[in-house]
Picture 1 (cartoon, rainbow, N blue to C red):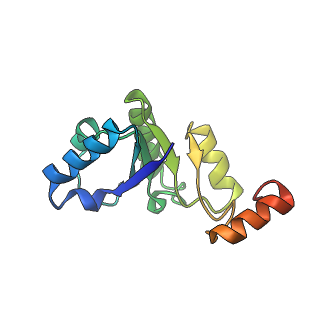
Picture 2: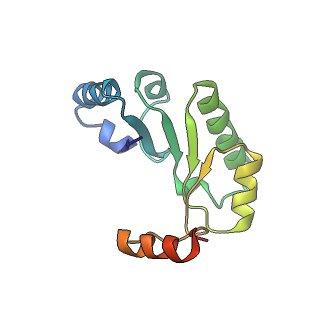
Length: 135
């Protein structure tokens, strides 16, 4: 399935047009992800009004695991998203400790340099052909 990503900040301009376009994409069976969640100025009410399937927690939350308030916030975002039937992706995972914490918090998918840096398509294909996997 093809998934379009939209950032929180993109919602600030032309909200009604943006929401209309997102609904049209959903009607065509595309998946929609809200990227960089938590760094913009949007309200939580957007989560109930937007036709999104996936919520991507911004990397600025990751790595602050020693801050108990931050941990409560991440846990709450994941739980709220799951109650709304949204898939949750954590961005910016760079080490095994971060990976394990996000697994314990029941994050659905993990993304970050821990697995691999971004690659051009040809390099990605070469690694997969040679190894059958990225890491």
